[in-house]
Structure formats: C-alpha cells, structure tokens
Image 1 (spheres, chains in turn yellow, orange, red, blue):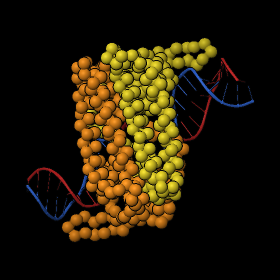
Image 2 (tube, rainbow over the protein chains, first blue to last red):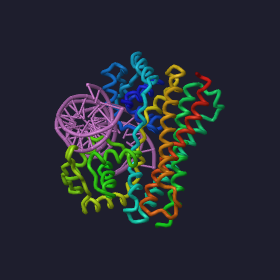
Image 3 (cartoon, rainbow over the protein chains, first blue to last red):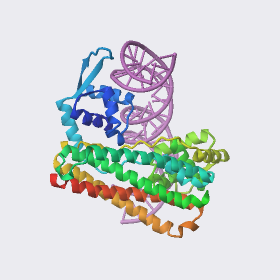
Image 4 (tube, each protein chain N blue to C red):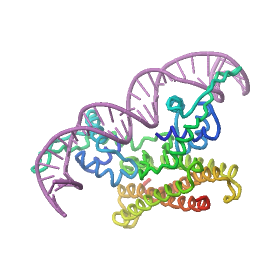
Length: 182
Length: 182
DNA sequence: CTGTCCATGTAATTCGTTACATGATTCA
DNA sequence: TGAATCATGTAACGAATTACATGGACAG
C-alpha cells in the first residue's frame, strides 16, 4: 500500500486537489511511482475514510468546483511511522517485458530485438535529459548546504540518473553483442 | 500478459513441471520477472486452454504424481510472434517504495533512512555477487563465439549486473550526502 | 519428531489498468 | 469547430499477493 503513502507524502508539503496530485505526481514522485487519476481519486476516498486526510470543497467561477485535500495530524503521524518503518528486506520485484523478449531473442527475426532496444534507448535518453534538466534547475547549489528535505528529494533524482545511465551503457553493450546477427 | 510468455519461453528450451518452472524461474528469468507458484499454476491452466502448452501426467514412486508441460507448435508460434512484436513505447512503470521513503526522508528520525539504505545495499551486493558467479560459471567463453541463444541470455545477465552496480554507486552517494544528519 | 523437498492446487482480496462518462472554458 | 485544460468520478476487468490446504519421503 505505497500509493497511499506516496499521496500522504505529497500532501505533507501542501494541500492539493486530486487533479493537482495527479499532475505533481508525474513530475517528481511519479518517476518512481506512477498512478492514474482513477487510482488517485480512489485512494483519496480511502485515505479520508481512515481520517488521514480531510477535504474542503471550493467553488470556482468559470471552472468546475474542486476538493482541496490536506493531511491531518493522524495522517502525518502515520506517514512518519511508515517512513521510519523498515520493510525487512523485500527487494522490489522487477518486471520488465523487454528483458523476457531479450532472453528469448534468438526466436525473433534478427533485426527485431535491435529495433526494440533502440526504441527503448531513445526513451531512456530522453528521460535522462529530463532528470539532468531538473538537476540543473532545482539542485544546483552546494550539496552540503541543502536543507534536509531537498537533500532527500535530490537523492531520489540521483538514483534516477544513475539508473538511466546504466541502462544506456547496457544498450551500447547489447548493440555491440548482437550487431553481427542482424 | 507477460508471465504467460515468460513461461512459454522457459518451456521452449525443454518440458518441465509447474514445480520445476517455479524454481527455474527464480534463478534466471526470475531475476527480471518473478512469480509465485499459485500464479504459475493458474497461468499453466490458461495456457493449456489456449492450447499453447500440453501436459502429460507422470506417476512417481515415493513422490507425488506430477504433470509435465511442453510447449505446442501453436505455442511456439505465439511466442515467436510476441518476441518480435514491438511494444510501442511503454517504459515499464517503476515502483520502489524505498524511494518514496527516501523522498520524505526528513520526516523520519535521522538514522532510520540510513539503516534502510544499508540493508538494501547488502541485498544488492549479494545479488550482484550471484550474477557475477553465474557470469563466470556459464558465460566465460569468448563473447563473439557464443551461440545466439546464449548471447541473448548473457545480455539479460549483463543488464542485471549493470543495474546492481548502479544501485551500489547510488548507495555510496546517498550515505555521503546524509551522513552528517545522523 | 521436526523441518525441508516434492508437488499441486483453491479462495479471497487488493492493486492497477482500461473503458466509459460529464461539462464548462479557453485558445488556435 | 475542435483540441486542451480543469475537475471529478464509476464499472469492469486483469494481474498479483496472501492465506489456506494436503500429503508422503527422507534427513538431522
């Protein structure tokens, strides 16, 4: 039940509507935990039943009404508890269909895998560029003087960068190793 | 529906029982697509209904009876089709609870995150060692002279290695960046 | 005599995706 | 006139986890 806590984490910085949540999620926390709007709205209902968030309806001129959600005291308490909890070991299960394809790659016509790989490489490259941009724009200061909340957020960004770099390196290796088969 | 095809891929090399499948899965393909036995048995039923696999019951002395599954012609055809198909872009969604924890790390007592990170680091380190062992034992030959099926399997292993190395590198960075908070 | 290996499943539940649905406003 | 933004949901389905269940053989 991590989406619940991801939402709490985002709301802990400031109140938002479901709509805003969806959009702030895919631009920060969404890089490592994605969710559709349907899921978010459903979780918000669950969170409200658990009294970890509360909402207030706000009428707007020229725009649909909205519900602004804020975290409650018990929600913040729960979030803190969860962050500190040690999850005793479950490495997150990997699920990458491309790797299954690759594993059985000899069954496809020679060019097919190479094309799929190249496609992915482009996407990863773009994502890396996005991360690097964020790094330059939001985390350009002296690391040691960053405020703690920023340091932790910066760390998650670094993880994204290192992962994408590893991916690109792999794509190079892969291309080299199968090039003579195409 | 990738588990279906993961199973087909494993069966394409030789017939196996459900039990064997579960265990060969977590030692090769399981590094990038894990599944419990319940899921495997259920998928086998579905695969059989689709006529992509067939089974034969084998009685054993001193051991429970077993069902040996083999891939059918139409199953192999489907597998080949699937491997060659291009999945038009969906980068696999990442879901890592530890990163959410990290993102909100300032809410936990200072040592907590460091401990969680260290725990994970150990696990990754071990996994990397396993990968390296497999690399030495099964893929020590000249890369260019490997038979195609082995080359593709080797590639997936390399990906595992590069990812774990990236993870460890990140763990180092992380430790350095938050050490003064503890 | 307890635990692990072999071997197979059912059932309940939760989590996540896809499809469907509405409706005003603003910009090209 | 048609797409994008803001804003919220329900319903159906599929994928994955967790719990429950059985039973003989063999090793420590």
